Image (cartoon, rainbow, N blue to C red):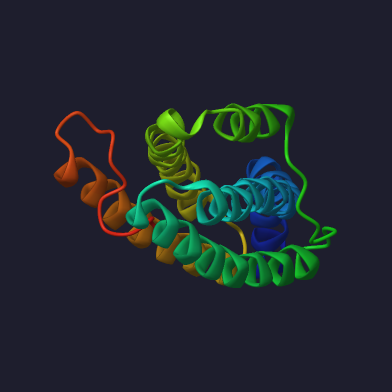
Amino acid sequence: MTSRAVLATLLLSGGAALAPRAEAQAQRPAGDRAFLERALGVNELEVRLGHLAAERGVSPEVKAAGQKMIANHTALRQELSALAKRAGGTGVAELTPEQRAAFDRVASQPASGFDAEFRRTVDAGHVRELAMYRDEAGRASSPELRAFAERRVASLEQAVRAAKAASPGGGSMGAGGGP
């Protein structure tokens, strides 16, 4: 067999084996977009909860945590929005019905229960967000998104650890409101 024939045989036989992989990689940018749209919604909930805590928090710690969340998640919104636009998405944050319900649940608390419900909601949200970013860090097709997700994982791990350390029962935000 000539080298041209060997090359043709390799290309033809390898093409079938590589087709599913190439198809999966072609679909992943859409997955990156979907992830970024989801992440924008999660982040928007954090911004809104931060405003709520800054306005309605009873303790100075919760008020400060709210201010920190506003600052951190407003900056994060800009970064997520830019990534989403580069991935072909809208870059616009929209809350899911579940996120709206979580916000409404916290907002409806009387002053006596506000701080505790706020902390529980934020702590639980950070645990879910950590899982979401860990998954994306391993699947992102964009190196830029992968690096971003890895940075978020590190930040969220720190927030989850701080919350657990502050309250063995898992109900405190730890050191100042999370990432």
